[in-house]
Length: 296
Ligand code: NAD
Image (tube, rainbow, N blue to C red; front, side, top):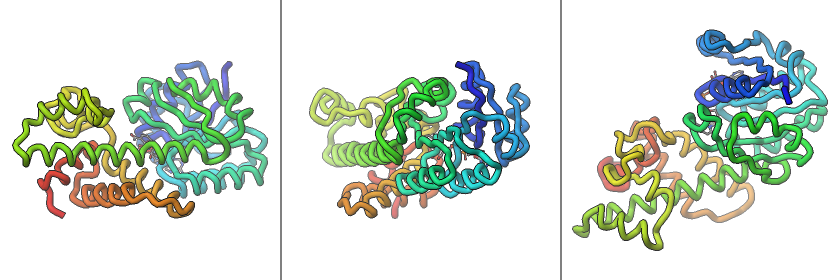
């Protein structure tokens, strides 16, 4: 089914997602506040909107892929101001549970049906159309959005009511962020104890410490050839984005009174790592901090 989509936010993730939606046969009108981005979008054959009013006039589904909650709330206010109503809004941005529930409330007051649909899989997943999408909102709206979701995601999960997509995303990433540090600490200790890193890798990957952070994104260079650590910590999932997600989890935990001591300690380490100027490198660079290569 061909859908008329208005795509707001054509950044590192949004650009390839919009391209994939158009390639899937949807009628996509894109918009970004960055003129250079808009220029690049048009050069690759994208149809560009000059105003939110144009997006509203064109779209049966508006999607947003913006940096943070304040951007999404401001954008929703503009859509409402331009008369968007009775139609669907799918927010793919990572904005946390509280902001997502604010957006759901704001939209409900103005008759907009909304889904929070954060993604994992990074820029590479966005380019391949193989993102993992977690969706919060009404199940009927989830079904209605399927043609648009399927154009960008390979794994699409209905997570529950308003904010549940964001809840799954921050909980998953908090666990992933903690586990990555646990793996780093094990290797740092093993090295001081005189154990070869390959020996620990072989034993742990066949034992009770086996996990994605060890066997796929191993933070120690030279053990997993495809891991970012083996390529100067380039590519992968940037430390500054991991920090953003850890902070969103911290904020949700504080709001709901859940003690997350390890999440809190891990957040501090990612903060130090980012302050040390390593924020743009893959989050596995945390190994260098845990290993004492960067003081803090
Ligand atoms: P980005 O900064 O590359 O892109 C955001 C885009 O939004 C920019 O082009 C910016 O100009 C545009 N923008 C900001 N305000 C706007 C407005 N009012 N109207 C129109 N355009 C506006 O960020 P990104 O890496 O694409 O990430 C987008 C979201 O996806 C974030 O919430 C991020 O946390 C999440 N995310 C990113 C990754 C990743 O690997 N980059 C992975 C998963 C999730």
